Image 1 (cartoon, one colour):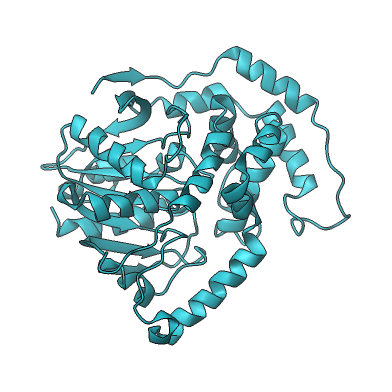
Image 2 (image 1 turned 180 degrees about the vertical axis):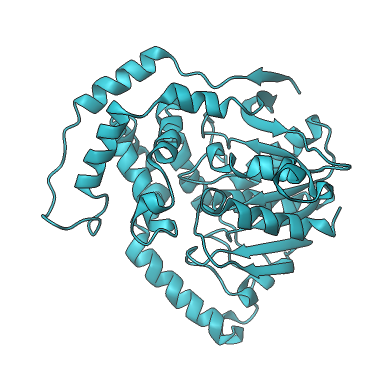
Length: 383
């Protein structure tokens, strides 16, 4: 496997073009005083785009990203971008951490130093990790797949080869959103390489095998299925679109930076533990850095396409199928819909469950300390 150092560096042509497009944004109309009720709030998006144009410093964000060690590896013909930071401790445990949609590898920047060098942040050096944070194919600075079937199961195969190429025959896996799907696929089909899984989300398509249908479900599971259906009815429009016709909206999102930002930022507000104020959890710089990664790499189309592939091969367990490697579950309260323990235990070997006091879908950005402490605690007995 060929591995080369990589540096995040966007061409001035891209940033110049971006500025011109932002300046020419053609704003939609909106119902007065409707706020976020119909989707992204017009007033906030105007404020964010103005900041993007007048105050956001991409070069400063590039410098922050490049403080980490970036690489690209050719894995099965695909270029995979990843951060690889070695741990500072007596025996660092290798761990691969996978992001989801509409996030990126940049979600993990706050937790990497805490995991690699716990002693420098008030922790025990024995808890150190060697951390690998890849960009999923079709996301960020990884290649955009040009073939069908690029789903979380295929990504798990690539992660095993990547980790083996880095010298790690056994490793831990962590993830939320699609990253939880990749991690679950690692536990299901590559258990001989996986020490344990730590998840802060359960794959949305996960369905355990149930012999007797809903008759055997606990009441809390039946209620979850009702709540889940209600959530998808009220909040799942984006998902249904990307599950069925992702290419159609790609023309708009790949052409309009304001449109791309609205599509992504609305989810950070809706899914974060922010009480309706997106900047209570995420700064404008954090939001725009994430959007910039999609914009500069032109990956919104390939990223959205993962939903289509997930529909073709969902995380539905067959009879007797179960993740047998140890699993730790970190439940952040704003993460919804989140299954009850009984539902998850039908398919996962849960060895640790922790209900956290705050945080939502983007746990590594929102509550890095809580997430890291839970990761440390779970893997402590598996080293």
